[in-house]
Image (cartoon, rainbow, N blue to C red; front, side):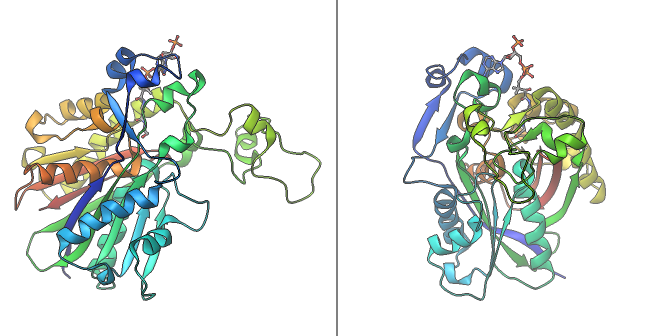
Length: 356
Ligand code: UT7
């Protein structure tokens, strides 16, 4: 069975740069607070009416396709990881197919909604499809337009200052080169804390999960209805219940435990150690998390790539953007061992080792 490899990679971020200082015009925050707690200096925001997760993803995909030396029509499967999709349904996978002008229908398209771990889950799925021989050119995209769904008032500041827009894409192909390509992927989940990092409304939950947990939250649903109802209520709109929420401390605490665990799991699986890692690309959630993991794994600065300072947390897009940047900067050489890892909503987390 052949391994699969990343045959082409590209990224695209919107032109509009929004600094921490810019955000102070909307909410009670400061450049010092944001930099000290997260390392973020600025982020990019998509242009309303012109850019969506699909269009950003398509620009990244075009670069990946070109670098893989294939044409759009060679793509036989699309995986699109995003939690800021253009529509509730259909997914961005089919919108991407249309945006790229792929007219053939002998192709599948799938959306992944795993938040920060979306790219790694997508890589694992692509890897299995390619290894099994089912597909030969899988397009995997991670793209987000968070800026359309953030609370820009002081109420939402603990979340809003962290997120940015952007996209990264890869082409996954089989490789006959012994020991090269995706060596392993490790995936995990724990639904216990599902609501601790979540975008709850609008949704079709009618408060069920909160009631199960003994939290009777009034979402503004009409209590008398027998069936049907609304997934968006006036109360949700009036009281700002339509934004992401996060228990930052719990996420931070859990992330710094799970990152090293899942990285060591992948290394052990391959009989490798942290010293073998040429480049570690952590999901860019918070510079402090990345630095904590780096210290825990005793990695040197030259073994780690961070860019959250310039883009913020672009969720499913952080890893392909950072990997693409590293490749463009000449930081990734033939035969290098690349380690990627992510942790986020769900909670879900994962890692992958790639021999370039
Ligand atoms: O991709 C998803 C994964 N997400 C993550 O990995 C995020 C993990 N968590 C974190 O990165 C951190 O928890 C944060 C950066 C989000 C927050 O840092 P923290 O040290 O946990 O701060 P906190 O939430 O405990 O808030 C401390 C104080 C609070 O004020 P009081 O109650 O002490 O008066 C907050 O209201 O900071 C306040 N605060 C802010 N102040 C200025 C919260 N957000 C802001 C803000 N600007 N943007």
